[in-house]
Length: 215
Length: 215
DNA sequence: TTTTATTAAGGATTATTTTCTTTAATGGAA
DNA sequence: TTCCATTAAAGAAAATAATCCTTAATAAAA
Image (tube, rainbow over all chains, first blue to last red; front, side, top):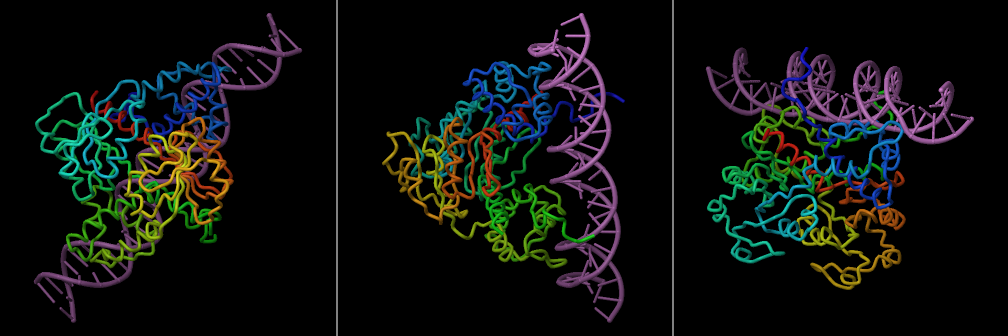
């Protein structure tokens, strides 16, 4: 009858985590409008979601709302950014400077959300040695040499057939979190987090929903 | 006691849809290895998922497996690509040629998955009139004029504060599916599909899981 | 030919997530 | 001050998704 459920102590559901950046974006717009407080009811109405879902999601952070008033906008922004890890700047290596990797190098938005790509790796002699958006492209063999313990995040944008191998290399090299943009399911030891973000998976969902509406 | 459940007739669960491109990628690698048949058991083992989940997911398509053999690789690839809408090429407009929009213009992978960006819109005089990766950047006001009924997909990569407005413009202009890269929740009429793909939401999940492991 | 092992597929169960309901708190109006 | 409307938060119920279990089919082995 212990209050802690063995292993899932403090684990935040993924759907909730995914919604939090939406709340954050909403709150930043609210701040622009000089709103000091905002209630879950209002957030829910504006965003078209269930009010209790908002309070449940926010309850995973340390914020506490005021009855009949809501949450303090500034505090909630701070708490959320902190909770989501958008405050501290994580260094990241990019693996695969092809079309998609290139694309990510062009997106400066990542910096704002706590991620800074400090180097990219590839095997193509046509790109190795170049610099894109200030980020040097090195040969993969260089990765092994630079044991920078401050770089824990790796972005995986290599072709599908190399994904598993490169991921294993990354893990061996000390990478603790792999942001996987390939459609391949990576299999690794427990101590390395793999976050799948296949753009094409989202595209597939959109196409399907569109065809549902049409018919 | 009718066999059809009123409205959700034939609707495919989003988790299943999101997994399908993974199966597709796996199958393409299997094809390279000249495998003719592949069973759900093998797919599951290789990908580290549950075998019945594989058969359930695939059962939403028209494919039928052979007992004791599995699925024919070539057929399954065809069926999946067709089912996911990766075969037909959809034209798309890009709204917001900033950092992230620019990034997407650099990703040629989209073409392979059935999406071709034919024009981009922005309001910044510094980019309007230019051409990026062969795609012309026009002023948003041009969008209203070009009623190309063949373009049903719109990619939303404008700053958060303009997201809702631009989305409404898109819907009015005949866009039927909005691929929303902003963290803003778009509110529109039922006949327009909105697919949220906030990179930062995924980043948030990864950071959280990483901190879970550490402690 | 008969047996055996493996498989797809459908239904049942369990886990997870969302939505609904209730309770207690409290700022503002009367 | 007293009452009322609105709110956060916690718990219950419903919906959804993942996993488990059973069955029938059938290639391959005996």
